[in-house]
Image (cartoon, rainbow, N blue to C red; front, side):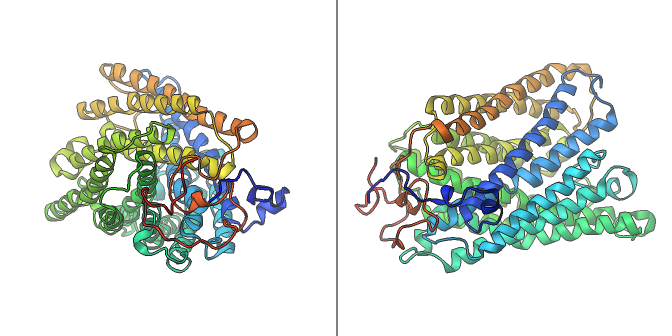
Length: 538
């Protein structure tokens, strides 16, 4: 297989006008439209986080009022969870790579794929409208009665935005499932699929099965608020605990919508930069499906202090410990893959190592929350904030950036500045730990979350956290700068700059509109770096 430079005709120059992009059915262009959207909302959510950390640098609430602070942490959570963390890897990297990795020309339903982006942007527009017209103060979980009775903020447009955005996830998941089932290249059997595809398949099942529950729940909140129906308000016969059951039935599996694609990215990075097949490939593949299934059975561990019975709490505690097993299998197998591997310490691998470290800390602290007694002690403290961010932000964003750097030459046809990229990865890792590790201590000592004032004895740890956030912010800005710079000034990338295996490395950088010059046929096993059929290192 030759490794030609950027071809004369590829998806990036297949029509330059705005209309050609807004009406495109090419999955690669749609992925870039998502990239622009999620990047924008990431920095909007990040701006709210900056204000939160500035407020918490001092014990007294001297920057914003308590009401404004409620809106800041709510809008930070809504933007980051629903408009960045959930769609980032599936809608950007998944959209770009799923068809190429299985040897298809596009996703099964190209028009539906474009529609999903428009739906995502429409939902984001409603939520942004809520922000600019006074904000939202219910918390990102929309707990009742805050969202149905007590709040005078823009609950209806925010809820409508999240309701609409849910359909984008459903359509994306449906598209991935059908594509993976029906459009694999000849020879691409299920056990030759990259683990990136397995993780997206499992994620898609959660999207299709879980998202409608959240959509209906948010719709019921809006109906209760507008028409005063008695779904969740006890004053009119409703049950607020019912809302928590419905919300967490989706929202805990949603954690795996964020983290399962990240795990798929890490499997690709570990194999590519250790020059080895992933150890125990079938176990890692089935672990993705196990996480998807078990993820639907653990929602009530968020409700140990909500008044559920002791027996229900015991069952959900056991199930919460159980769901940690397939995640531990993945971490063990990644570590075993690195053992005696020819490890190459390039930027994507640094992000993969960072992911394993941060995700492991997040996973181990999750066991604290699965234990009912410990969970009761740390519920609604900064321990929860730290745990959540180690999993979702430390895990998802490290994998997202690692995958973006790994496939950037394929996406853009250009190489980035490796030295700056390594510096950025290290800055993010240091800044993240300095930001969130002190919050474990704060939470254990009893500092409640969602308060803009706190006892003075907690100030030192909060100052450390705010200082770490400033370092973390610099680390996040650097990739945007040098990746943008590389689009014009970066060296041209070959078809396979990493010497990796997989169909995406058997086409040009960037790929042609139909992905391959001729239909591919797979004759090698997944991650078979010893096979003569794979592309040789360039």
